[in-house]
Length: 226
Image (tube, rainbow, N blue to C red; front, side, top):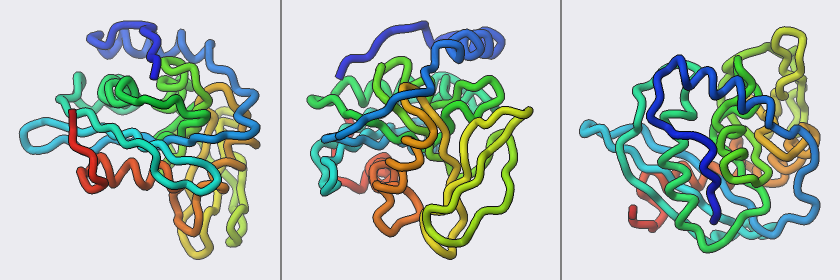
């Protein structure tokens, strides 16, 4: 899979924030796949006591959602954890895993934020720009913004609003469980993002691509790290 080199990663936190603000202007919040054949999920593990983490990308076919390809990259995150700069910590390893792919997904679901970020460039948006593929942020918690109550039935949603701007939506994917927070990553609109996330949940709270990527990042999906 092709990865575009938009900037270097070894930067100061101040420079990283400048890059985020600049790249946020390049995010395209429209479009999306019409008839996807391959949908991928990405995730990264927490660092081990030795400081090493594993990033995984799992490609599934659609609509069956059977596993087509699994790639895992292992290494030490370049930055310590800094609120708002998660993409600078996690992107390099995730992109290393994506470079190993033989296939190019039509859509990538990311365990993280898209434009639902203080500078409108979370992990999903950052990855989307580097990969030039439609991406969606599927986060388990809110980074910024708030929403009104939503219904208990699967498919219920409520706009996530930050500083007067709709940056995503809270989405109930399964009855009786907490919602997830969906936002545009790149090259997709919010309505399409919500549609494809729901299509991929299949009875789970989290969409199957990111759920399996989480398992693979933990070394439990049969892929050896490269």
